[in-house]
Amino acid sequence: MTAQQDFWNWFTKHEPDLFDFEKDREKIFDQIASELAKVDPDLTFEIGPKEPTRDFVISAAGIRRAFPAVVALSTTAPRLARWKIIAFRPRRPPMTIELGDHCIDPDAVFFSLTDDGKLVGVSLFIPGLISSEIVFKQIGYLLLDEALGEYDVETKIGLIEMLAPESRQRGDRYPFRELAKHFDQAITRLEGSPTRPS
Image (cartoon, one colour):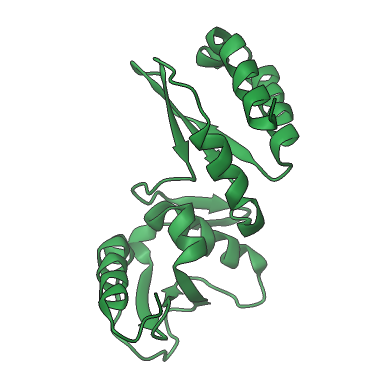
């Protein structure tokens, strides 16, 4: 039996408790994390709100090496009536990011795009950015994950820059909430380019 099968056997056995995890959140989440670590130590998860079904998101926490483990686990999931199994953190409407002493409203962030003929480059212009503070890089990646989803951020973006709004970076700037639309258009252009390797 594979590690993936072991995980889903455990999940199925404990499904009632997992679905109602709010009754003992810390214990249940620790158990899920422990079982996921048996598949791959870098796997993480998210559970969506209780509706008729719950989302169970399997994530590699942005660690590219663990992407195959996410795919392997999600594709071996059994059919579960009350669950939707999702590989990688999906796109979501960007929310305000609070990290440390910083609070960044996505409506205050702008972006520009470039491409090298193979991948799209993204520059984020973040208010209050101080280049020496690693927290701004973390905020930038959290914003990108929300807007574009974990998979696209790790596989379709080349250069990522976090810049102050007053930066003289060339290129048109757009409101951050328009990123997904412009990014998808750029990817479509690249994929249709005859110079793009197959």
